[in-house]
Length: 403
Image (cartoon, rainbow, N blue to C red; front, side):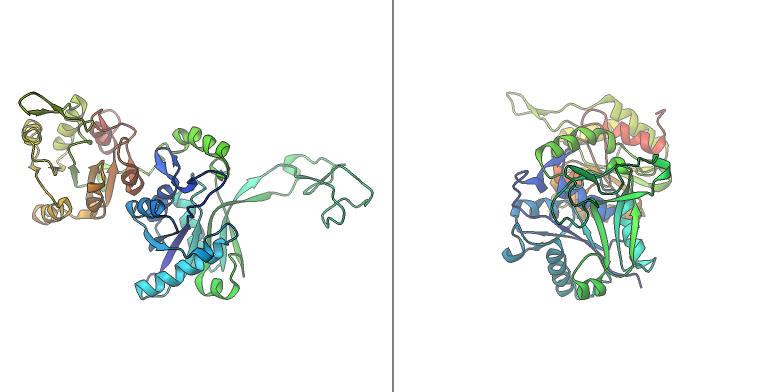
């Protein structure tokens, strides 16, 4: 039986350094949704829980696929500890789900570039490696200094000395980097604890603590507006698709496409007689034709009854279901009738009515212009907005960049 591993993301509403910090967008996605997305993608995580006292954070977390547990006021203030929030969330989860937690993770959404591999690594250290606790660390090569203060136990040997002194080095001796012991910086991003040991100790570090090394380029904690500005500047670089992060033809048997906002830019033009027109991208048509030639099952699924949806589907020679209120039920029935396993379906959407379909398929994909909650719930996000060639981009993922 697989262990129950619950990732807890504490996300208070009150933030003084950056107002509404946990809802601040980095790379177009709220911080809390970014953390939920990576936790959900981790191999060992059973459920993702967001502990919050804020309705806006709760809505964003649910939209990204997390379980939300309302945090009581007594552990939601400025002096409340993360451990208190984790303990409360773990107790509430066990009561609601009726099963014990084997390992609990503390994941900080203020570390925007935490990745699923690091979340899995700290979890694996506990549930597979036998550690009692684990945390993410990054190699650190700097010389740390501190102003001399009276009675500082780490202060200089000469009590009369004033000014700065070396904390991790002797200021009179400057060894080369390769000759110094490797220091490791706690990133503040992810921690894992054996649940029973955590209940006893009440602290995130106990017993044997495993250090999980991560990429120092991704280490950034958002505490003030300057940190947030840096994160937004770095997002285009660090959010770029990583090898293995996108689906290939071997992963997919069927592609299901939303229409408005996915194959269009979500705008509608209405003439004097009430007729509606939309703009589509010729590159998407080429991409869909290539997917059809690759013998992938295709479907357009839309809530709109507008004749333009059916007309576009006919031109593309793709089956269409439109005027659908419950897209998830229609998708489930289509998979059964087509003999397609939902976990091998790639579904492309852009708005919150696509989220139930995201929960059914193995590859939920959002276009770049999608609603924040949809981007947060997606397993992959295109670099191209809807209506501008996003479907052709996805075809390139599956069939190769030369498409």
